[in-house]
Image 1: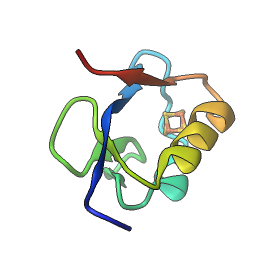
Image 2: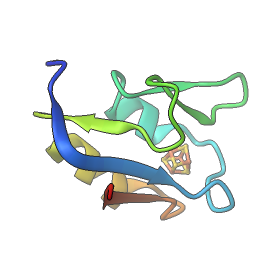
Image 3: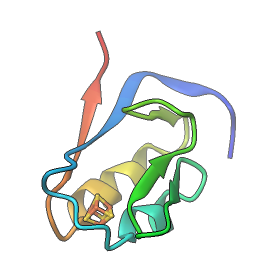
Length: 77
Ligand code: SF4
C-alpha cells in the first residue's frame, strides 16, 4: 500500500449503525484495525480516516458490502 492520500477522500463510520461485524476491517486492513469487540479503529487516529491513493476501490467495496450500511465515502472540505 502506498502512503499517498487521495485528495480529500475519507471514510465516515456511522457508529449508531455499526454493530462491529468487522467486514470493513478485513477489506481495509491498512486503514482500519479492530478493537476487542470487533469495532473498526481508524489506524491514522482520526475520526474519519483518510483513504490512501490506490485504495479507493477497496473503500468503495467496504461501503457497498457493510451489512449495516454504516459506511460512507466523503470528501473533506
Ligand atoms: S462492516 Fe459495517 S457493521 Fe461491520 S464493523 Fe464495519 S462499519 Fe461496522
